[in-house]
Length: 113
Image: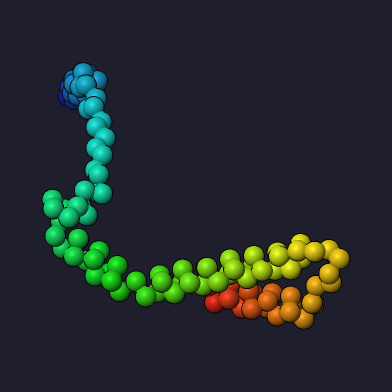
């Protein structure tokens, strides 16, 4: 009799917890959006972040300028090679000059990369 009442008591206990668990409403999930661009605002942004951005821009300026110069030179070499090949079909292209320009462009491209 004691075993039977313990089993019944256990089943009633489990049933009550199951009913209580099923009666709960699932929580509503919320998604937030943070605009991190506002951190870099000069007036209202995070001061340390703004100062770090300025220091980084100052430090990287010579490298950016050098890369822009290399890019401009690569474009100029590409344009010169295109002019050599399409300028006048009756005039033969100087193969050595074209090869020198192409080698210079390839070297500059490797340095750029």
